[in-house]
Length: 304
Length: 304
View 1 (cartoon, rainbow over the protein chains, first blue to last red):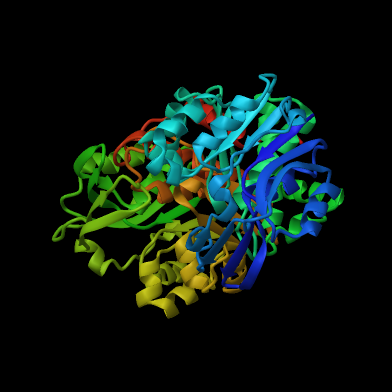
View 2 (cartoon, each protein chain N blue to C red):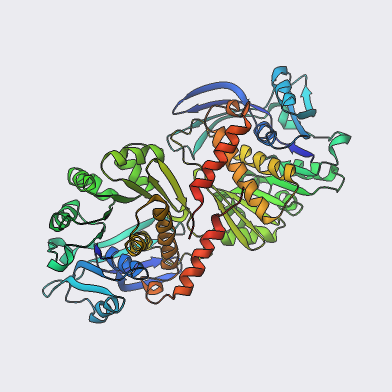
C-alpha cells in the first residue's frame, strides 16, 4: 500500500561518548523512509535538500524502493544541517548548531502521483507545513501519523492543535505529551490528547520503550536493552518509519495490529542506534529483522 | 514454603501532590510482608520497633499469616521514623526527616524457628546487618534476595560487596545499578553485578517497570500505567515482597518462573501506589489480583 513520508533530509555532525561523525546523512524523513522500506514498497518521499546533497544518497534511497520525485533540490541553497552532542546519558543531548538552510523556505508541493497515498507520515516540521501537506491530499487516506516536538508547542501551539485535529495517530515523547496535555500521568495525558483529535496516541520513552493508547486500551512495547547505544540520533524517526511501514504493508489498523507495528518500530529503532547515522539501516536482511523480533518476544512474553 | 523477611518497620510522614498523611505505617519489611502474604503462608518477620508502635498493627500482620515472633519491641525507644515529600514527578522525593530511633542499635537475633527459612528477603538495611542475618541461617536456604540502596555504596561499599557475594538475587534501581557497576548500560551493569555474586539481577525502573537479567537472558516487566499514582512510598519493597512471595509459594526458581514472579511483584506494586501507606495492601481479594495480572498480560502480550 502506498506510503508518503515527509520531513527533513539533512546533514548531521554527531558526537557521542563512542566517537564523532561529521557531515553524515540524517533527517527524520531519511531515517523513517529507510525503516519503512523493510516492510512496504511504494514509498513516496517529500523533502528538500541543497545542491550539496550527494546524488548517491538519493540513489541509495531509490534502490530501497523509495520514490524521490518529491525531493526538491535547490540549486542555490545548502542542505539542512544539525550538530549535536550526547553525554553518557544518551537520553539527553545538546544541540550545537541548527542551520535551516533550504528548509527555511520549504514549501512542499506534492507531485500529483503522491496525493492518493493511503498511509502518510508527517515528520517533525512546522505544523503549518504539516497542514499544508494534508490539504493537498485527495482525502482517500487510511491513516495519517504525525510526529512533533516541544518546540512547536512553544512557538506555534494554535497551528499544532489544528494539525493534531486532522490526524489519526500522534507520536510524541513522554515529556512532550505532558507539556501538550498539562497532565503528568501519561494515562491522563493520552486521554486529553485523544480529545484533541487522534484516535491513537503513541508515547515514546526512549530507552524505556513506547506506549500505545487506543480505544481505551494500553499496550507497552519495551526498548531492547543494549550493551551499547552507539548513536541515538534518528531512533524516534526510525521507530515511526517501522511503525507506519508495517501498517502500510499489512493494511490493518486494528489494535492488535497496531501493537505489532509498535514492536516492529521498536525493532528498527534498536538497529538504528547500533551505528552512526543511517549506516545500520542501509542493508539489513530479513533474517536479522526476524531474529530481532524474536528477541522482543522473549523479552516480554510470559505465561501466567 | 517458609519465607523470612527482614527490614524496617516504621512510621512515615508522607506528602504527595494529592495530600498528606502523618505517622502512617511504613517500613520496607512491612510492605514486603503484606505483599508476600497474598501468595504464601509461613512468613517470618524480623525487625525492631519502639514502644509507640500500635499493637493492632502487629495483630494485623499476624492476621495475614505473618509470624511476628522476630519483631523486637524496645520498651525504652521509639519506632524508626521517616518523613518525605514527593513532587509532581513521583519518581523523585525529598527526605525531610530520618530518625533512626530503635533502628540505631538493631542487632537482629533470629528466633531458632526462623533459621531454616527457605526463602529470605534481606530488605534495605546496613550491609553488616544483612551479613549478620545470613550468618545465623542454617545453610538450607533455596533463595536469598537482597535489596539495597546508593547510601550503602557511599558509606559501606566493602561490607555491601561482601553481602552481595553471598546472595542469589539482588534488587536495585537503575541509577544504583549504574553506581554499583560503574557502567551506564544496564546490560553491562547487570553483567558486572552478576560477577559480584548474584545469579539473578533485578533492576527496578519505577514507572518504567523492571528488568530481570539471568542466565544470559533478559525479561522486561512493565509497570502498569496509572491515571493516578497516589503515594509511591514502599512500591519497591512491595514489588520485592510480591516477587519473593510468589517464588516461595511456587518453589520454582527457573527463569520462566522468575519472569512470572516479576509480574506478580509489579502487580502488587501497582496496588501499593493507589493509596497512602500500606492501606491498599491490607485487604485485597484474589479476584482483584487475578484481574490486575490480566491487565499486565494485555498490556504486554502480542502475537507476531
